[in-house]
Image (cartoon, rainbow, N blue to C red):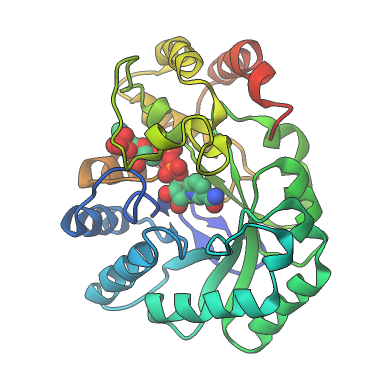
Length: 328
Ligand SMILES: NC(=O)c1ccc[n+]([C@@H]2O[C@H](COP(=O)([O-])OP(=O)(O)OC[C@H]3O[C@@H](n4cnc5c(N)ncnc54)[C@H](OP(=O)(O)O)[C@@H]3O)[C@@H](O)[C@H]2O)c1
């Protein structure tokens, strides 16, 4: 699939990227060997955008990315977007100071072994942070100081995304998938007009949209699909897209017949995201080579038909919208 422009940055990225949370932590054990192999497989298939954060395994994900890129002879045209802010405890708006974020940037520079971060995203900060113009000024100064090439935000909801566009951000990361469609109605046109890149996260609804999960599927103690199922650790919208597990499974059974030919539901779910031209890059997580390769190939699926698109919308409107649309 054709690369897409990453907002105003001048970069062109493969619209299927790589989400590096699962190779850091919180998704059950993934060995260094599997993690590196998964990332290498994605890069071998032409993926050139990686999303990570300082808290994914407390530096593990960033260091692993640095190691893999070094082993491949350097950065070439690969964009690495990281995030900062979630190390702050308590998570209160007042804690989001320029000094604190600068400290996190310095650590990420070390972990990623670079002089400047490609993109630094504020990592789902409390809503009042989006009204803190001084913080965004501070990010601008970090660009001028050569520590950041660009900065953006990873938001919890559409309202925060719209507010963040008051500042000269390069990108917005937001949950967008077949079970989370609000950004279509209220965000995408504005982001296109303002030339802000959209990074679609949780594209497989934490794996639900692969169609492999069953009512009795068990998740380990160290997997957020177990310990955050009711939002005990962080926003419940990050786990299964905030859809109750049984409702999600039932919706998947309605989506499954929409898959055409030899395609998988996972690849169809990713291709559905790319049907929206406001989306710059979708960032599926992958824990092994097979997942990384099949996700990377999803961009090559033919476009979904108007009938398929309408049927997905119908499932969303009937079963999912009443539960999520007003929340995020
Ligand atoms: N606040 C934030 O900024 C934030 C929050 C969440 C995510 N993110 C970013 O978004 C990325 C992606 O979201 P996500 O990781 O939450 O969820 P996701 O991409 O919706 O789901 C990823 C999980 O689905 C399973 N999977 C992936 N590809 C598969 C395939 N082809 N076949 C079968 N199973 C497959 C894997 O887990 P299993 O094999 O264990 O099922 C994988 O870990 C993250 O890695 C992270 O970079 C950011």
